[in-house]
Amino acid sequence: MWQIKKPKWIIIDEVQKIPKILDVVHKGIEDHNILFALTGSSARKLKRGGANLLAGRAIEKKLAPFSTLELDDKFSLNKALSVGMLPSIWSNNLSIQEASDFLYSYVNVYLKEEVAAEIMQR
Image (cartoon, rainbow, N blue to C red; front, side):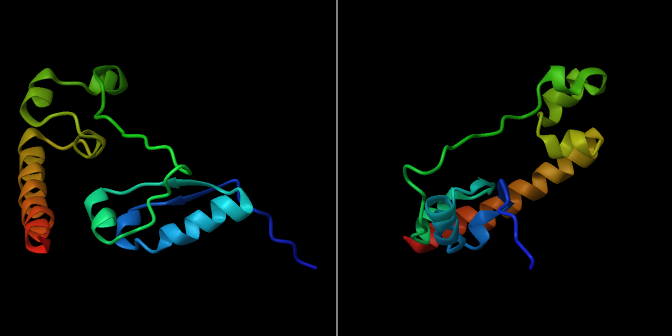
């Protein structure tokens, strides 16, 4: 007979896209002692949607941008001052121009999608 082994960790990325999944996470924590690592980029979407925020069951951690020590010999002061230290810029080895284009697009989409949507909800 097959026996399913309980996972030690379950990782869910972009959890804000399906807020109801937090009810399943809650049950997994309470009933099965499963550990979850949840990532997401919009706590506003979760709060606005009335999602289960796992109060008392979760520890919030925030990831900071890269440090000069993490980048070691890839670090460039000029690039850091020009475009910042976000991992997506440095991990993809973007030039300063590519990184500037990326940041412009990100901010433009973020402002249009997230902030405008938030204003419309009020």
